[in-house]
Length: 102
Image 1 (cartoon, rainbow, N blue to C red):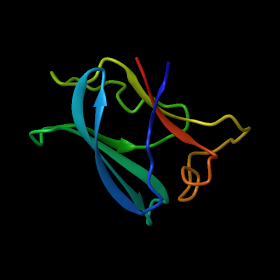
Image 2: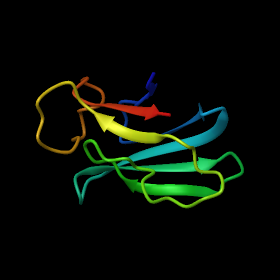
Image 3: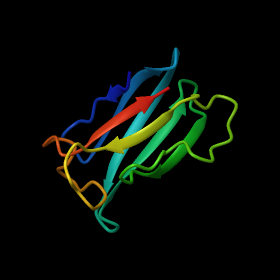
């Protein structure tokens, strides 16, 4: 069952979450120059696991080699027929959801 990662209606935010039984810090920020969301995942001691753009149907953890990497995938998904990456409002208006799938 996918775990939805809460997305706040702010241009930058952070939260602590549990993925696969381990606690992490998730940070997201809207990049106005590139017009995309950037997501960072860190361990609770501040070690960066990944920092990458959020792209439609792309696993943010793909290719990440880190001893504390969650085993699953973090993906931006949409139930709608959208042929683009998420824009500034898409997570707050329900067009996209950010999910963790083990």
